[in-house]
Length: 238
Image 1 (cartoon, rainbow, N blue to C red):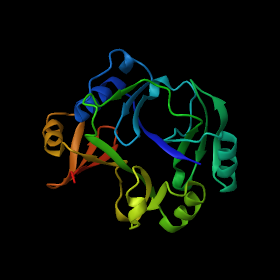
Image 2: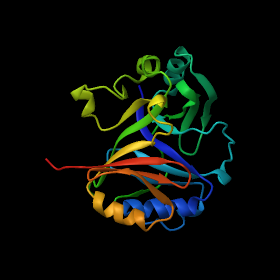
Image 3: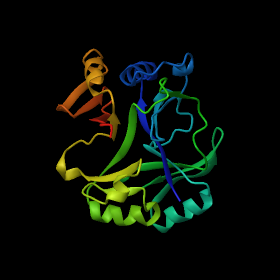
Image 4: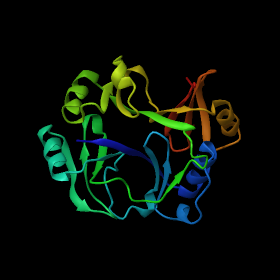
């Protein structure tokens, strides 16, 4: 019923964020787009990082969505969300090139559900390869088992627990991974496998928009100036 489409990185300085993330991923900056409300980075694996600017929030969403899902039948998706007793914070409305609604899931996570993939122009890997593949989106929750029971009832195959060892599901390209808030005070937003870990470390040291967190020879955590975190893992070719 649902597929992952992207996650928002909200900012009050979009141009700065665009240049910082474009440099981090070694993507070219698309002229003119960083002056608008949204700038979309299209990573391998089918998921997008959506940089948006608070100043252009014409809908005044409160709270703002953090995650974007797609579902071809919005009415059916809306009914399923209501059946789980999740709060609908915005009913189905017509957006730019799509229809969507918002709902609040477990632990205050807010999702946008669209009836098609985002129609915005995207910045993609100029190499045409898969240098950066997004694997997991982290959803911190207070009670993993309880949250999993509710989310899995409508997102079976998309959501998983942090300690899950299912090799079939582990091979899927994108997962919403439920992680316990008790393990750490702040979780990164997502996990990305990259073929350029050493180069990224060099670029990060020269970019004031980011600070390094935990790191070793196979992974590193990155935090931007807005408090968004990413985990990069070395991708080994088979």
